[in-house]
Length: 337
Ligand SMILES: [Zn+2]
Image (tube, rainbow, N blue to C red):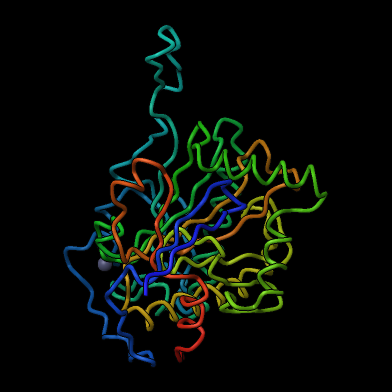
Protein backbone atom coordinates (compact mmCIF):
# COMPACT_ATOMS: atom_id res chain seq x y z
CA UNK A 1 0.00 0.00 0.00
CA UNK A 2 1.48 3.28 -1.11
CA UNK A 3 1.04 5.99 1.46
CA UNK A 4 1.80 9.56 0.56
CA UNK A 5 1.92 12.73 2.59
CA UNK A 6 3.57 16.12 2.61
CA UNK A 7 5.41 17.28 5.70
CA UNK A 8 6.61 20.80 6.35
CA UNK A 9 10.26 21.31 7.28
CA UNK A 10 10.31 24.19 9.79
CA UNK A 11 14.08 24.58 9.38
CA UNK A 12 14.06 25.25 5.63
CA UNK A 13 10.52 26.59 5.16
CA UNK A 14 9.76 23.96 2.55
CA UNK A 15 7.68 20.84 2.06
CA UNK A 16 8.94 17.27 1.72
CA UNK A 17 6.95 14.59 -0.11
CA UNK A 18 6.74 11.24 1.68
CA UNK A 19 5.88 8.31 -0.55
CA UNK A 20 6.55 5.42 1.77
CA UNK A 21 6.37 2.06 0.12
CA UNK A 22 7.67 3.65 -3.07
CA UNK A 23 11.03 2.07 -2.37
CA UNK A 24 10.07 -1.50 -3.05
CA UNK A 25 13.44 -2.78 -2.03
CA UNK A 26 13.54 -3.72 1.63
CA UNK A 27 16.76 -2.88 3.38
CA UNK A 28 18.27 -6.08 4.55
CA UNK A 29 20.23 -5.57 7.68
CA UNK A 30 22.10 -7.71 10.11
CA UNK A 31 21.09 -7.02 13.69
CA UNK A 32 24.61 -7.04 15.09
CA UNK A 33 27.80 -5.26 14.19
CA UNK A 34 30.50 -7.49 12.80
CA UNK A 35 34.12 -7.42 13.87
CA UNK A 36 35.97 -4.72 11.94
CA UNK A 37 38.09 -6.00 9.06
CA UNK A 38 41.83 -5.88 9.58
CA UNK A 39 43.14 -2.58 8.37
CA UNK A 40 45.92 -2.76 5.84
CA UNK A 41 48.12 0.30 5.21
CA UNK A 42 48.11 1.27 1.57
CA UNK A 43 51.51 2.21 0.17
CA UNK A 44 49.89 4.30 -2.55
CA UNK A 45 47.64 6.21 -0.15
CA UNK A 46 48.77 9.82 0.39
CA UNK A 47 46.96 9.92 3.76
CA UNK A 48 48.74 6.87 5.25
CA UNK A 49 51.66 7.36 7.69
CA UNK A 50 54.97 7.47 5.85
CA UNK A 51 53.45 9.26 2.85
CA UNK A 52 53.20 12.69 4.49
CA UNK A 53 55.49 14.17 1.84
CA UNK A 54 52.88 13.54 -0.84
CA UNK A 55 50.50 16.03 0.79
CA UNK A 56 51.10 19.71 1.65
CA UNK A 57 52.74 20.17 5.08
CA UNK A 58 50.49 19.79 8.13
CA UNK A 59 48.96 22.93 9.60
CA UNK A 60 47.62 21.21 12.70
CA UNK A 61 48.04 17.76 14.24
CA UNK A 62 46.72 15.91 17.23
CA UNK A 63 49.68 13.88 18.53
CA UNK A 64 49.41 10.17 19.26
CA UNK A 65 49.10 10.00 23.08
CA UNK A 66 51.28 6.85 23.12
CA UNK A 67 54.02 8.33 20.95
CA UNK A 68 54.13 12.14 20.62
CA UNK A 69 56.42 11.79 17.59
CA UNK A 70 53.54 10.28 15.64
CA UNK A 71 50.29 11.95 14.63
CA UNK A 72 46.82 10.75 15.53
CA UNK A 73 44.91 13.34 13.45
CA UNK A 74 46.53 15.41 10.69
CA UNK A 75 45.27 18.56 8.94
CA UNK A 76 46.73 20.04 5.77
CA UNK A 77 45.58 22.23 2.87
CA UNK A 78 43.77 20.30 0.15
CA UNK A 79 46.16 19.65 -2.74
CA UNK A 80 43.30 20.16 -5.20
CA UNK A 81 41.33 22.92 -3.48
CA UNK A 82 37.90 24.20 -4.45
CA UNK A 83 38.88 27.58 -2.99
CA UNK A 84 42.45 28.72 -2.39
CA UNK A 85 44.05 31.26 -0.07
CA UNK A 86 46.33 32.64 -2.79
CA UNK A 87 43.45 33.49 -5.17
CA UNK A 88 42.23 37.02 -5.74
CA UNK A 89 39.64 38.36 -3.29
CA UNK A 90 38.40 40.91 -5.83
CA UNK A 91 34.78 41.06 -6.98
CA UNK A 92 33.99 42.07 -10.54
CA UNK A 93 30.67 43.91 -10.42
CA UNK A 94 30.97 45.63 -13.79
CA UNK A 95 28.25 43.44 -15.36
CA UNK A 96 25.33 42.89 -12.97
CA UNK A 97 24.11 39.78 -14.77
CA UNK A 98 27.57 38.23 -15.02
CA UNK A 99 29.07 38.76 -11.60
CA UNK A 100 32.17 36.95 -10.53
CA UNK A 101 34.87 37.04 -7.92
CA UNK A 102 38.21 35.39 -7.29
CA UNK A 103 38.08 31.83 -5.94
CA UNK A 104 39.50 32.86 -2.59
CA UNK A 105 38.94 30.79 0.51
CA UNK A 106 40.29 27.82 2.45
CA UNK A 107 40.00 24.10 1.76
CA UNK A 108 41.55 21.73 4.29
CA UNK A 109 41.71 17.97 4.71
CA UNK A 110 41.46 16.35 8.15
CA UNK A 111 42.76 12.76 8.14
CA UNK A 112 40.78 10.89 10.78
CA UNK A 113 43.59 8.58 11.94
CA UNK A 114 46.70 6.82 10.69
CA UNK A 115 44.48 3.82 10.05
CA UNK A 116 43.63 3.35 6.37
CA UNK A 117 40.52 1.26 6.79
CA UNK A 118 38.70 2.34 9.91
CA UNK A 119 35.91 4.84 9.50
CA UNK A 120 34.53 7.13 12.23
CA UNK A 121 32.11 4.37 13.24
CA UNK A 122 35.01 1.95 13.83
CA UNK A 123 37.56 4.18 15.53
CA UNK A 124 37.88 4.20 19.34
CA UNK A 125 35.84 6.93 20.96
CA UNK A 126 39.05 8.66 22.17
CA UNK A 127 40.16 8.96 18.54
CA UNK A 128 36.79 10.41 17.49
CA UNK A 129 37.16 12.90 20.36
CA UNK A 130 40.62 13.84 19.06
CA UNK A 131 39.14 14.42 15.57
CA UNK A 132 36.42 16.65 17.03
CA UNK A 133 39.05 18.60 19.02
CA UNK A 134 40.93 19.31 15.79
CA UNK A 135 37.74 20.28 13.92
CA UNK A 136 36.75 22.55 16.80
CA UNK A 137 40.19 24.24 16.73
CA UNK A 138 40.11 24.73 12.97
CA UNK A 139 36.55 26.07 13.15
CA UNK A 140 37.64 28.65 15.72
CA UNK A 141 40.72 29.70 13.74
CA UNK A 142 38.88 30.02 10.40
CA UNK A 143 35.77 31.51 12.02
CA UNK A 144 37.90 34.37 13.39
CA UNK A 145 38.75 35.58 9.87
CA UNK A 146 36.31 38.44 9.16
CA UNK A 147 36.44 37.77 5.42
CA UNK A 148 35.40 34.12 5.67
CA UNK A 149 31.61 34.08 5.95
CA UNK A 150 31.13 30.36 6.51
CA UNK A 151 33.21 27.49 7.82
CA UNK A 152 31.74 24.27 6.46
CA UNK A 153 32.87 20.93 7.89
CA UNK A 154 31.82 17.79 6.03
CA UNK A 155 32.68 14.18 5.39
CA UNK A 156 32.04 12.22 2.21
CA UNK A 157 32.03 8.54 3.15
CA UNK A 158 32.05 6.10 0.25
CA UNK A 159 32.31 6.62 -3.50
CA UNK A 160 28.57 7.15 -3.84
CA UNK A 161 28.85 10.09 -1.45
CA UNK A 162 31.60 11.68 -3.55
CA UNK A 163 34.67 10.38 -1.75
CA UNK A 164 37.68 9.96 -4.03
CA UNK A 165 40.15 8.60 -1.45
CA UNK A 166 39.06 5.75 0.81
CA UNK A 167 41.32 6.65 3.77
CA UNK A 168 38.76 8.18 6.17
CA UNK A 169 38.99 11.96 6.20
CA UNK A 170 36.86 15.06 6.66
CA UNK A 171 37.12 18.33 4.81
CA UNK A 172 36.68 21.97 5.75
CA UNK A 173 35.81 24.62 3.21
CA UNK A 174 35.68 28.22 4.37
CA UNK A 175 34.12 30.59 1.85
CA UNK A 176 33.85 34.37 1.44
CA UNK A 177 30.10 34.12 0.61
CA UNK A 178 27.15 32.54 2.45
CA UNK A 179 25.66 29.65 0.44
CA UNK A 180 21.90 29.88 -0.09
CA UNK A 181 20.89 26.92 2.09
CA UNK A 182 22.87 28.24 5.05
CA UNK A 183 21.44 31.73 4.52
CA UNK A 184 17.93 30.28 4.35
CA UNK A 185 18.32 28.09 7.43
CA UNK A 186 19.73 31.03 9.36
CA UNK A 187 16.94 33.39 8.26
CA UNK A 188 14.23 30.88 9.19
CA UNK A 189 15.80 30.41 12.64
CA UNK A 190 16.23 34.17 13.12
CA UNK A 191 12.56 34.83 12.33
CA UNK A 192 11.55 32.06 14.74
CA UNK A 193 13.71 33.55 17.47
CA UNK A 194 12.23 36.99 16.79
CA UNK A 195 8.69 35.61 17.17
CA UNK A 196 9.24 33.11 19.99
CA UNK A 197 12.26 34.40 21.93
CA UNK A 198 13.87 30.98 21.90
CA UNK A 199 16.06 29.07 19.47
CA UNK A 200 14.17 27.01 16.90
CA UNK A 201 16.66 24.19 17.46
CA UNK A 202 16.08 24.17 21.21
CA UNK A 203 12.32 23.92 20.65
CA UNK A 204 12.75 21.33 17.90
CA UNK A 205 14.99 19.18 20.07
CA UNK A 206 12.43 19.32 22.90
CA UNK A 207 9.54 18.58 20.52
CA UNK A 208 11.36 15.51 19.19
CA UNK A 209 12.03 14.37 22.77
CA UNK A 210 8.35 14.85 23.63
CA UNK A 211 7.26 12.92 20.52
CA UNK A 212 9.90 10.17 21.12
CA UNK A 213 8.99 8.26 17.95
CA UNK A 214 11.90 9.67 15.92
CA UNK A 215 14.50 9.74 18.72
CA UNK A 216 17.43 7.35 18.25
CA UNK A 217 19.80 8.38 21.06
CA UNK A 218 18.97 10.48 24.10
CA UNK A 219 21.95 11.54 26.21
CA UNK A 220 22.37 14.32 28.81
CA UNK A 221 24.19 16.52 26.29
CA UNK A 222 23.10 15.47 22.79
CA UNK A 223 20.00 14.05 21.13
CA UNK A 224 20.08 12.09 17.86
CA UNK A 225 16.85 11.82 15.90
CA UNK A 226 15.46 11.30 12.41
CA UNK A 227 13.90 14.70 11.69
CA UNK A 228 10.12 14.91 11.14
CA UNK A 229 10.55 16.21 7.58
CA UNK A 230 13.68 14.20 6.67
CA UNK A 231 14.60 14.89 3.07
CA UNK A 232 16.14 11.48 2.43
CA UNK A 233 15.75 7.96 3.88
CA UNK A 234 17.59 7.54 7.20
CA UNK A 235 18.58 11.20 7.47
CA UNK A 236 19.66 11.70 11.08
CA UNK A 237 20.62 14.74 13.13
CA UNK A 238 22.63 15.25 16.28
CA UNK A 239 21.49 18.33 18.18
CA UNK A 240 23.05 19.62 21.42
CA UNK A 241 20.55 20.11 24.23
CA UNK A 242 22.07 23.53 24.88
CA UNK A 243 22.11 25.33 21.55
CA UNK A 244 25.05 27.48 20.49
CA UNK A 245 25.09 29.32 17.15
CA UNK A 246 28.16 27.54 15.79
CA UNK A 247 30.26 24.47 16.46
CA UNK A 248 33.22 26.71 17.22
CA UNK A 249 31.30 27.98 20.27
CA UNK A 250 30.58 24.48 21.61
CA UNK A 251 32.18 23.86 25.01
CA UNK A 252 35.37 21.81 24.55
CA UNK A 253 34.30 19.65 27.52
CA UNK A 254 31.25 18.52 25.50
CA UNK A 255 33.39 16.97 22.75
CA UNK A 256 33.84 13.50 24.35
CA UNK A 257 30.04 13.22 24.72
CA UNK A 258 29.59 14.33 21.11
CA UNK A 259 32.15 11.73 20.02
CA UNK A 260 30.22 8.96 21.81
CA UNK A 261 26.92 10.05 20.27
CA UNK A 262 28.31 10.48 16.76
CA UNK A 263 30.17 7.18 16.83
CA UNK A 264 27.18 5.25 18.09
CA UNK A 265 24.85 6.83 15.54
CA UNK A 266 27.27 5.98 12.70
CA UNK A 267 27.62 2.44 14.05
CA UNK A 268 23.85 2.05 14.05
CA UNK A 269 23.64 3.29 10.46
CA UNK A 270 26.50 1.01 9.49
CA UNK A 271 24.89 -2.07 10.99
CA UNK A 272 21.35 -1.29 9.86
CA UNK A 273 22.19 -0.32 6.30
CA UNK A 274 25.39 -2.29 5.63
CA UNK A 275 27.98 0.50 5.73
CA UNK A 276 26.13 2.95 3.49
CA UNK A 277 27.81 5.83 1.72
CA UNK A 278 26.89 9.03 3.52
CA UNK A 279 27.58 12.73 3.70
CA UNK A 280 28.04 14.17 7.16
CA UNK A 281 27.70 17.92 7.55
CA UNK A 282 27.94 20.41 10.38
CA UNK A 283 25.39 23.21 10.14
CA UNK A 284 26.05 26.53 11.88
CA UNK A 285 25.22 30.21 11.67
CA UNK A 286 27.15 32.35 9.18
CA UNK A 287 30.15 33.99 10.90
CA UNK A 288 28.56 37.44 11.05
CA UNK A 289 25.64 35.98 13.07
CA UNK A 290 27.69 33.64 15.20
CA UNK A 291 27.34 35.74 18.36
CA UNK A 292 23.54 35.89 18.14
CA UNK A 293 21.29 33.31 19.78
CA UNK A 294 19.02 32.59 16.78
CA UNK A 295 20.69 29.50 15.36
CA UNK A 296 21.66 26.18 16.89
CA UNK A 297 24.53 24.22 15.36
CA UNK A 298 23.83 20.59 14.57
CA UNK A 299 25.20 17.66 12.62
CA UNK A 300 23.28 15.98 9.80
CA UNK A 301 24.16 12.49 8.54
CA UNK A 302 22.74 11.88 5.08
CA UNK A 303 22.99 8.27 3.84
CA UNK A 304 23.16 8.09 0.04
CA UNK A 305 20.76 5.23 -0.55
CA UNK A 306 18.89 6.84 -3.41
CA UNK A 307 19.73 9.28 -6.17
CA UNK A 308 18.00 12.65 -6.42
CA UNK A 309 16.10 12.75 -9.70
CA UNK A 310 14.28 15.17 -11.98
CA UNK A 311 11.57 16.34 -9.59
CA UNK A 312 14.11 17.11 -6.87
CA UNK A 313 16.34 19.04 -9.28
CA UNK A 314 13.41 20.85 -10.83
CA UNK A 315 11.77 21.93 -7.57
CA UNK A 316 14.29 21.61 -4.79
CA UNK A 317 11.58 19.61 -3.01
CA UNK A 318 12.56 16.13 -1.88
CA UNK A 319 10.65 12.87 -2.27
CA UNK A 320 11.49 10.57 0.62
CA UNK A 321 10.48 6.90 0.55
CA UNK A 322 11.12 6.10 4.24
CA UNK A 323 9.24 7.76 7.08
CA UNK A 324 11.59 8.97 9.84
CA UNK A 325 9.56 7.04 12.44
CA UNK A 326 10.43 3.83 10.56
CA UNK A 327 14.09 4.82 10.19
CA UNK A 328 14.36 5.67 13.90
CA UNK A 329 12.82 2.37 14.93
CA UNK A 330 15.25 0.40 12.75
CA UNK A 331 18.21 2.38 14.10
CA UNK A 332 17.09 1.96 17.73
CA UNK A 333 16.68 -1.79 17.29
CA UNK A 334 20.15 -2.71 16.00
CA UNK A 335 22.77 -3.90 18.45
CA UNK A 336 26.10 -2.15 18.54
CA UNK A 337 29.27 -2.60 20.56
ZN1 LIG B 1 45.63 5.43 3.78
